[in-house]
Length: 298
Image 1 (tube, rainbow, N blue to C red):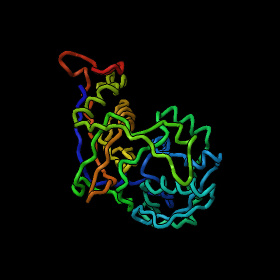
Image 2 (tube, helix red, strand yellow):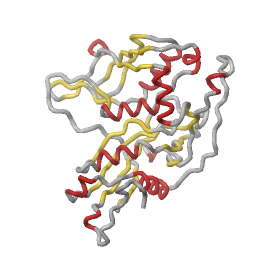
Image 3 (cartoon, rainbow, N blue to C red):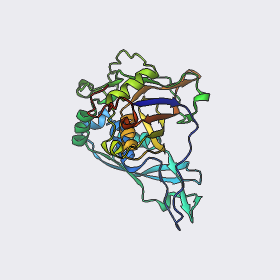
């Protein structure tokens, strides 16, 4: 049996790193989750694709002792539109501060080699086929531009899980691009789903890990993440783990979810939430039924 509950909490950083003389700042997201973040969020500017602009943007940045980016600028440019796109992505990332002898310290840009973001049209086209959308349709023109992350107690409308798509693979938007009048992208009819629909989605996707079954492992995986103004997730971190592959399975499924973003004062805002997924080993159930072992649903 798999049970799911959803909670909304304040964001806290990951556990402290082992004390070392000097550790550079790094994103809260692990390397693999950060890779998924770029795969889902990367949007290639239409004009850059039309004019075949490619390259790696390198961003210089400074991070204070609280993990806040204080300053960032383009260290290596590609083109104005690509540079702007890279900065938009970079600004969504939350950071662990640098540490010296285990204590958080500020890190100036001069101490960093720069943060690279690659833009390659051929790889992006492959990515579009893999993820199933080319553009992210804006939920609203009325968005909070401050990049501030709000707790659920601060928003008036909570993020809602959706089963429909707010994304488009309309290639005509690229072929017919006019830099003075960009073609608007179709926005489909979106029907918000309840928590039960989120539960149903996870049931239909998740597979109880064989190792967890063999070792009779049960427990609750707790994940914290930000629902961005585009309805995608960012900054997913694991707050509580379960062995036997359960944590990895929970992360994999949650990264697939899409949402209607939260709202405050009539503006679309970034919202922090926490999701808890309970893994109950089927070996402990009376009917001995193994849920979703073949990923075929209940």
